[in-house]
Length: 589
Picture 1 (cartoon, rainbow, N blue to C red):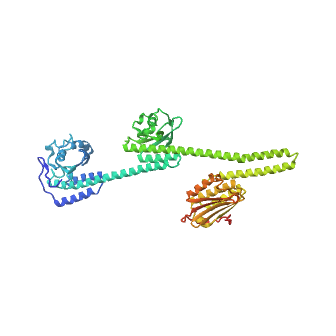
Picture 2: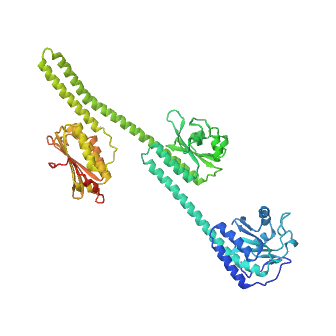
Picture 3: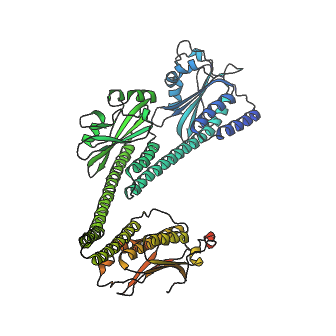
C-alpha cells in the first residue's frame, strides 16, 4: 500500500495532518529494526503488533494475517484482557472495516466509533473504543493482512500523520512477514529433510540387519529402538508366531515388567485387535484403547496412551509376527507414515525369517559335527579299545598254559592303550574352542606348542622373528594362530610324524607362516580327500586376511603348509621384542 493512497474516511474522522517528521522517522527506524531482529513466524507477527501500537501510542492493537485461502490464518492482539480477547476473534473477523479494507485495499481512519456501533459489532459489555485506524499490509499488490489500532492515548483520534506513519511501517512489515514465511518454509523443509534422512537410515539399517547373522533378540532390540525414536512412540512390543500351534507369543517388549502394554503373554486367533492384524495381514490403528480387553488398562490410563498401532511383520506374505506401538494421546497416522511402517514390517519380517534360518543352520552344523565326532570315535578309538579288550581276553586264557605269550599279549595291550590315549589327546586338541583373540602372536604360538606337546608324542619347535612381530596386527595374528592350530591338529591326526617345525618370518613385504612335518606325506593329486574340511578352513582364514595358502606334500617326504600375508607396516608391537621366545631354534628350512 503506497503512503500516498487516500483512506476511506468515515464521518467524524480527523483531518489533522500535523506530525513531527523527525521524531516519526526515528521511531519508524527503531520499529523496523525491532521487527527485523526476529525471523520466527510468531516472533515477527508479535513484534509488528507491538511496534505499530507503540508508533502511534494506541491503547489497543490487532494484527490479522490471511491464510491464503480467503480466511483468517493468524490473529494477534495487544492491550486487551484475556476476557476481552475471548470475544474478539469472531467480532473482529465479521467487522465492517475488515471487509472494507480487504475489498478496497485502502486504509480506514474513524474518529468516533460510538457514532457507528455497527462498524465493529462489538459484544455487549465490551470496553468502548473511541477511534480506529485500519491499515492493509500489501506485498506486490497482494494483501497479506491488516493492522488495526484503537484509542490513541492522549488524543481523541488518530491523525493523518499517524496513518501515514503506519502505512509506511506496513510496507516494512510486509517484507518482514514474507521473510518470516520463507524462514518458516525453510525450517519445515529442513525438518522434513532430517526426518527423511532418519527414515532412510531406518531402511538402510533394515537392509544391514537382514544381511547380518544377528541373534533374534538383539535384532528386535535394535530395530525397535530405532522405530520408537523415529515415530516418537512411547512403547513397543513384538509378538512372534509359532509355526505349528498358530499362537503368537510375546517375544520382545521395550518397557519394565510393571509397565507392559499387554497383560497377555500369548494370543490365538479370534482375540481382539492383534488377531485382526494376524488375520488380515494389514496395518491397523485404534484410538479406542478402553475397548481392548487384552490391554493392561491401568498402564494405559497412567501413561495417557490414546493411540495403538499394529504392524504385521511379513515374510513371503505370511505373518511371522506383530509389532504394536503405543502413543501418548491421540496420534494421527499420515499416508507417508503408513507406507514407511509397511516397509518396516516387511523388512523386520524378512530379518526374523533369516535369523530363524541362521539358527536352524547352526543347529544342523552342530548335529553334523556330533555325527562326525561319533563316527570318528566309533571307527577309530572305540574299535581300538575293543581290539585291546580282545588282546587282554586272549592273554587271560594264556596265563596258565603259555605265560610267555601272555606277557607279549599284555605288552601289546599296553601299546594299544597308549595309542588310544594319544588318539584321545588328539581329539581334545582338535575340539578346543577357537574364539580367542590373539594380540601377541609370539605368546599365542608358544602356548599352542606347549599344548601340542602335552597332548602328542611329536616333538615341536618354534621360531618367531622380531621383524615379523613388528608388522602383524591383531586380526592377522588371530587368523595365523588359528591356521597354526588347525595345521598342528592335522599333523597329530594324520601325518604319523616325529617332528614338526613352525616359523613366523618377514619375507620382503610379506609375513610368512610355515608348518613343516617329517611325516608320511601324501599325493595331493591322487588323494584329494586329504585336503578336506581342515584345509578349507585354513584357506578361508588366509583369504580373510588377504593372504594365500600353499600346501606342498609328497609320499614319504612330509608336508609343508605356507601362508603368505601382506605386511601391515603401520602396526608395531614393541613390547613383543622384549619377550623373545624361549623355544626359538633354527629350523631346517
